[in-house]
Image (cartoon, rainbow, N blue to C red; front, side, top):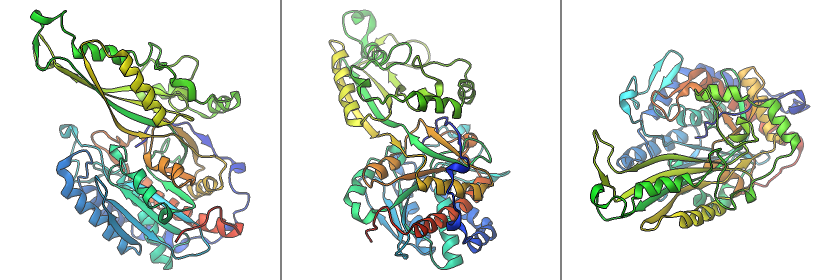
Length: 493
């Protein structure tokens, strides 16, 4: 899930549709239904969160099967046609409702897998026993992404139960491997391209900039994830007998990793910046006016001093400039005391954040060539690609984003912010590159939700107001299309 510090752009009157005729038919019955059923909705969300669907833990296969069956049954129960579709990893739950010929089709993407809960000792309660504390639901996945995904499911139920139909056609893809980089999603969508054809996409897997400030995302960086393993001797060697005569994989790995960027944060891989987009002075001035200050970003990070590529603000560094990050390193002895050995292997995981107009294939080739050049003599390197996602940018002035902005204003009683994010969502990339549809990133998480960390939680005010926002969004999208008298893309039912 993308959780980088975003920049806020206030949506003024000029950014909203000039006419609200398409919103004259207020979804009053659906809103009333949602408000009357809040307690039940919360109870069902707790059931959803109880499934320990940790996608990188093989022992959870039975939990994934049970969760997928629960989710599909739930979707069928609210009036959608739902199926469980196997993949090479965890199943995708697909659902649809295609009952209105003259309305657009909206594709909802979400994921029901979660991050590991370890270390569980740092949780104040068991991570898969959801608990309401104050106005928050605590539990792994409560915010990322089960709670946000469930916002749309409950909006769909409210519309179906109140009106007996939906104002738009809907297709849903809920995958079980997003936290592993969505390894099967692109192939799945390509195989089912015609069946999944839609007009717009909506994803709720991002965050609001602050309480009571609804937020719409319009840009994400891409990411390429690597694992680098370096091997030397076949077993540990006594450093007194062999130190200085035999290459040390741990030393070599550190040298190789250090060669990836310079002391100021500029990536040192030859050719890396060839495809990095240069933004106009006008765009950078706009970002400086609309975005967070350097002090804001440092405050969010909890640090006193910044670091990064010269010539750019912190906000620019985390949104429109690429970055390389060492995520973990292991090798040798790390127990108490000292063990004077040369380890036989060392391993590191690192990731590259990419920006328009970079593509993962080119970045992989550049990194691979660089690793081959800098591998020390006497050592053997193996570079593995753990996943990749290309950047996404949506025009802030696109009509579907303006409709989402008005829905946020209706649901939260406040004008939304438009944001750029430094994070990545594989689903957003696939919807753009494979289905060629604009996607609204409509986030309901908050910075204090502790996403990916112990004691993850979801603000229940955001849950309930998010449901109402989703109801307004589906209603507004249908009426806007109907009033325009034309369709941007044809449905393939």
